[in-house]
Image 1 (cartoon, rainbow, N blue to C red):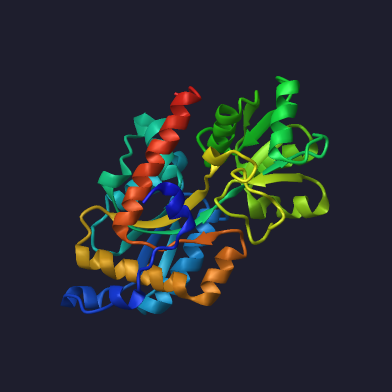
Image 2: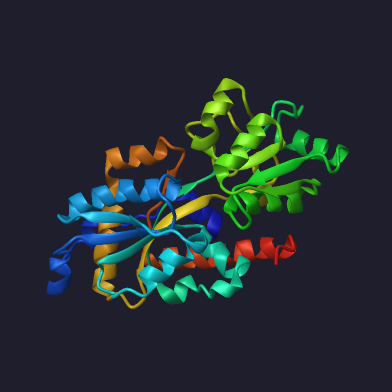
Length: 323
C-alpha cells in the first residue's frame, strides 16, 4: 500500500476483534491510569488530538488515559521518555510527523523511531492550507507559481521553524514547481501567521483551523490545500493535486506509539482502544470539524507508513540542501 492510498483510505480494523479473547494479563489491562506523553507544549494539534482520543480511550478501557506534555528538543525529549519506559502499556506516546523528519534534519538526536518505539496506530491526518496575503494578485496555485517566477526574490514563505512539515511543504513546492520562493523561519506557527496577515511575508503553509478566521474575513486568500481530497471545512479550495501538482499531496499526521518490545497482546489491546475511540461518532466529529481525516489501521500499517514518511521527507531535505 503506498502512502497516498494510506492517506485516502481508512483501513478496516474491527474494534470488537481487537478487544476479543486474549491472555489473562492483557484482559486485565489497564488496572491503573495510563500516561499518554505528548512531546510538545499544550495547545497545538498534537495536544488536541491526544486529549480528544485519550478521553475516549479512558472511557472504553475503564481507566484514565492522562495526557502529559513533555516538550523539548523539537519533540525528542518526550520521545526518549516513552522509549525508555517499561513496555507494560502504562506509558504511551502520542506524536506527529516530526518522528519522520527529525532522524534526517537532526541526525545528532540519534532518533530511530521504528527501533525505539512500537507503532500502535495512525489516528488522523491534517492537510495544510496554502494561503497568501491579499496583496499577492493570484487566485490559484498556477498563478502563484507564475507570479513568483516573474518576481524572483520577492516572494517569501514562513513557517513555525526549520524542519516543521509546513516548512518542508514549502520547500517541496519550490522544488516541484521551480518557484523561486524564500523561506523565513519563525519561532512558532502563530508568529508566521501573524506576519503573513500583516503582509511582512507573502505566503504560508499552515493548519486549516489556524488560518480559517482570516480566510473567511478576507485577511488571507486561500490558494489550495495539500491533501489528497478537499477539506470538508473548506470545500471551495482545490487541492494542489487538482491544480496539476500531484507530487505535492502531503499532510501532518498524528498517531499513537508505545515503547519497543511491548508484548503483542498488549499491542492488540491498545490498538483496539484507539480504533474504538475513532469509531465513536462524537469523538470523530471533533477531529473532522477541525479539518482532519480519520485513519484506522494495524500497527504494521503504521510502521510501514512511518518508514515511507521518513524516506519521503529525507528526499525533500536532501534536495533542498537543508543538511
